[in-house]
Image (tube, rainbow, N blue to C red; front, side, top):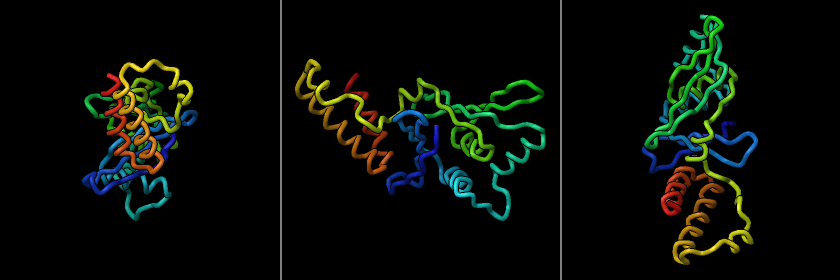
Length: 184
């Protein structure tokens, strides 16, 4: 995954959406993170060095002082709306996985130049497709169980596409959840 950017909205109460994008795909994954974590990620992405080391810089320096390195970060689970991640590193020639919040794991991955991965199940559950994967002719050929439900679903999918195009990822995540409920 690549980091597409950070987004905020007045209704988020100071939280930010960290947007990950598939390197070779068309899905995006919004993850809500706190202000401090968003700042730590943004500073590193913009190559801005604060006068004193921030927490993630300190962690990087500690990891390096133990002759270790972050090899990769994996967002491996989603449970009741909360994402979980692991930091993979090497210790004494042994691979170790350390549980972490995705925001902290990603802040470290950026500092180490480590790749970011998302478990397929997590991406299937929470990812947002940025392009229509079903053509209109294919949609017209599908059997219509209930015209009202299909119309409502189409309307939600159009709103979802608009939210993605305008980079309103908080709204897009809510619409994605509504669509999943409707599809049952």
